[in-house]
Amino acid sequence: MTRDLEKHSTDPFGDDGLDALFAEARAEAPPPLSASFEARLMSAALATQAVAAPPVRGGFFARLKGLLTEFGGAPSLAGMGVAGLAGIWIGFAAPGPTADLVSSFWQGAASVSPSLSDWSSSTSGFQYSTGSELLSLLDTETD
Amino acid sequence: MTSTEGLSDDALLVQYAAGDPQAARLLVERLAPRVLRVTQRLLQDAAEAEDVTQEAMLRLWKIAPRWEPGGAKPSTWLHRVAVNLATDRLRRRRGVDFDEIAEPDDPSPGVVETMIDGERRRALDEALALLPDRQRVAVVLRHLEGMSNPEIGTAMGIGVEAVESLTARGKRRLAELLSGRRDELGYER
Image: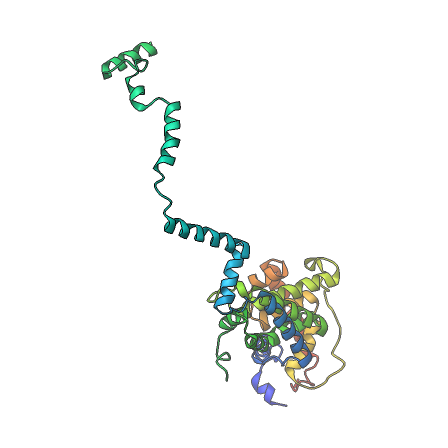
């Protein structure tokens, strides 16, 4: 009975006494959870984990399949395959020079527009060949 | 002891986010009891305290994938979430703004009738249960959870001066309640 009086010799419920009581309460370990409540918490934890956790990484083929899926799946793979085969065929068959094909396009274009030499020799362009002539033209325009 | 058991709470949370179920179990065992105790003290209702603890833990699980180790401790973060959830419940329980609850000038519930044992800590919890809500929250957070007055003010939605006033009145009332049980608690008059 008197052990407490030794601990709180003045007033056990004064500021010091209460502070000592608070300190005891803080230091005390919390009681363990009941089994049923802990089971509830674990169930929620695992359910949330199943939704949020990253997918388990599979083997090489599983990752390859995932990669292909991101690029459009089997149809895109078929398209890439056809393009690749066509490239190999062109490489082996060497269909011959394509210069004629290209030049036919350029010639057509040249016939529509005048050539650069024609343009530069035209007399309808600027007639001023020196800087002083250009400056005098500017002076007359600003006046 | 498994390799996981020696990890910090931070590291366990990262492990949890990576899909380790053992990390979840260890975090529940380490963190939930303290959260349950503070929510029980604040709410004075076992079922509500469990609900709030479960909600706080759920929020921890959800934030785990985005958790940045080295910042706030998971225990501190969880504690604050739980305190906020509990004070929100207290507001809703009264149906009015928590800040507007009138404090009785001199609540006189009298000495606790049923004395289970003479333990002082038990008596403290019983006396806390008799305090008005706001005084109890302020005293619990300040003196049992070690929060600063500004932190308590933020959690309760009141100013620091109001926190100081509530804490002082709460302590005074606690002293009165416990003093009435002086003989039961083994103190001589």
